[in-house]
Picture 1 (cartoon, rainbow, N blue to C red):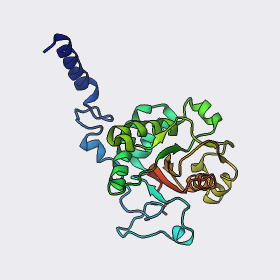
Picture 2 (cartoon, one colour; picture 1 turned 90 degrees about the horizontal axis):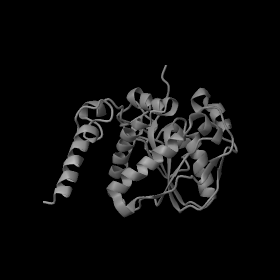
Picture 3 (tube, rainbow, N blue to C red; picture 1 turned 180 degrees about the vertical axis):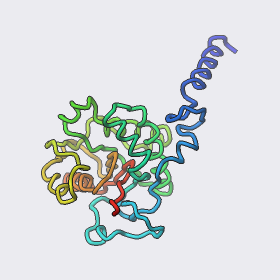
Length: 250
């Protein structure tokens, strides 16, 4: 074998052994992004409303009262995790402490759920769009976390799906024109008011959209964006989020 080629192979093996073949969270040796121990620490959104994926505490599959009264405007909702425990901690670390290295394991879990959902469906969305932050919020943080997450999701899906991967551009066709108060600080009534006239659609888009956001709380943000996308010409909007917030108890 050519010595130069052999040297490259050996260097690659060492690089993978030292820097890649480890769990992203605990750094234990692992052939996958997450070791079994760390992956078990995520709260899986196993029991949820069939339409909006709001977590429930029942083992029975059903449509929640809110969706029965007013079905959501989107067509599909994928939310593999509950926004609590480890998931909540990692997303807060990304958003408020610039720890972008935690994006990879979260997006890896989402990509697995997406492939599981669409494996028997030929009709993957053809375009991936993310819900952006307001420019002022992006300037404060130094980045838009949903843009970074959607970009990572595109890369991972590209490796797994090849040409079936939805197209992606780093500038979303959705624009947030009003810098609203953070959703988690508001009541449900205030959240509904918080989205009037906030999002606009500008740019060319496909008919079947995958709309990405990191966390779905009340669902108002994604419902508002879905309505704007359909008003602009989209015929199907599938919601892809990392996590769904459980209703408060007690």
